[in-house]
Image 1 (cartoon, one colour):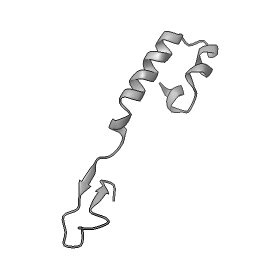
Image 2 (spheres, one colour; image 1 turned 45 degrees about the vertical axis):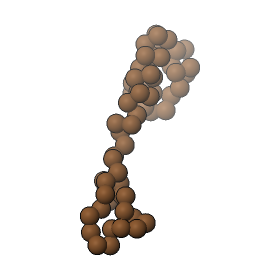
Image 3 (cartoon, helix red, strand yellow; image 1 turned 30 degrees about the vertical axis):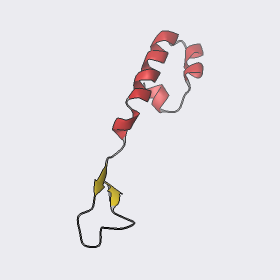
Image 4 (cartoon, helix red, strand yellow; image 1 turned 135 degrees about the vertical axis):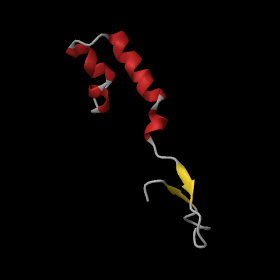
Length: 60
């Protein structure tokens, strides 16, 4: 998992001695939960919030 998050491709990990089936399993799980690592969009409730900046990321 750490190697994939660090940017190594699955094709680069197999020659390093990792099991190809396990590498593919971790890659699929990582790709399937990618949306969980993004902050949701929230509505800004204020008189000036309607317009271009109405939907903002949570980390404003």
